Length: 480
Image (cartoon, rainbow, N blue to C red):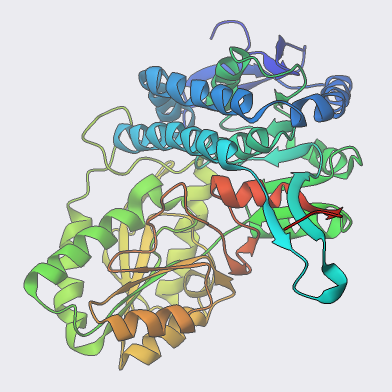
């Protein structure tokens, strides 16, 4: 490895003597060394963000939009470089790394467009006699600097989903990337440094997880945007009740296959989509398919197709373009998945395919007869594992989906409009995807969950609203 990658402190490169190594999840090979931010450097970054808050918020919309559009263009131009980093630091197969880079570019592009539309609204008040000659204007202003805490599973695009909307509304942002995957966020910092944004508008600071509580508690950072595990997220919210906290947490995403999804082509398509999106990112996605409920008449034919599809997935080196499923982020994660599957089998579950671990890799796995008491049934496995369960009716399938502490997204495979609207009204989740798996996400749409899956929404426009607050202006003595 060469000299340590520096952090970005208020838009400038800095280093420190506290260095850690980033290693490949696939084979443990060293990828890079990175400088941790010291406590003094973090303090300077926060102070710079506070100083930048007013000048950044007062920048003309076109300046912020042009900066974001420039980043979008440069992410696309340096696609191969980002893909290589994602393969190396996250063990992400090339095909999925390419998708993530393209999505990150799109996220910045959407934020640039939204920055130009960020205008507020008017409300006439002469609807009552007392309001004659008055007009209300409602605009949104930044709550203040944002602390963004990012996860390892989408280390580029989920950083983009925090940075782009914050800068779009004129809110300074400090990014804490996951220590296992900081490199793509640091490379993104290089692109941000090429813009004309004011100093202090943004920082990318690798900080040890052990020091995260003091950073969260800093009163100069009134907004905390966290993506990661539920226990950590809820502890953050409890620790800072006076701050505005957004949480994008876990899920155990489910898909329901309705009885009308019954042709051979329908079943083939369902098997292909479920197999792919249970195992993409090695299952390390909050909306990876984990639970599959199938109306009874279709259970056996779908299960047979699904097992065969999963069996054929290419597993291996993430740098190989043919690989579809790479390693988990570390061996501890792979061992945990192994333990959960063993626990389910001890309780009566049967493995139809997979069920093997080799180092950090866990074979794509399909189970049936998983007991409801198993963690695999109730919690988020965050690995390449799914189970299939027959249900006697469409309504019972919806009830099974709702029987969860999580509520991020759900998929419903049906072509009946009435069933689609019924599912939308019934499912207690943040998003219902009709005709596909729950793993579908367009970066401009509102994305987030209910119950244990978090609070707030991502997507540029939605996050822009989360990072701002309404402020009312009443004009008196105006002619309408």
